[in-house]
Image 1 (tube, helix red, strand yellow):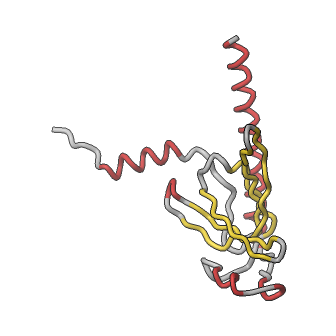
Image 2 (cartoon, rainbow, N blue to C red):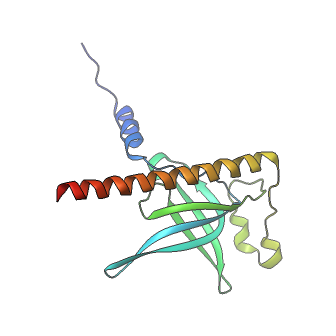
Image 3 (tube, rainbow, N blue to C red):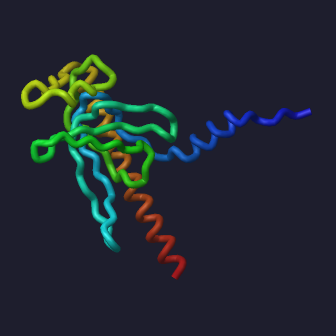
Length: 157
């Protein structure tokens, strides 16, 4: 008699298959630039959104992170789904040294009080080097995928 795989096991396998893209390692307090694909009418462009990560939700395919920036004197927050195809790339600009996991207290602070110290430890430097290597590998993989798609299109004609 064979046992059927549990629904939980099937869901985990499905999520592993779907989660094809990895983002560089980042955390709360880090300043990141998220390049987002924006569709306006019939054309598509890439928009850069730079700000401080104030929270991360780790939930498999439903993982998300919140980025806060000050735009024209107003605080603007945007939640990005980690595995969304609309995220073209993510770059870590600087590592922030914070102790809390969620930085919601920044919402009530203005100006210099809302600044976050930069993390200059050896661990942060290692993370920066790893993130740069991951970014280069992701760019190389994207180029290979584009070349493969172009070759397939040429072969189809």
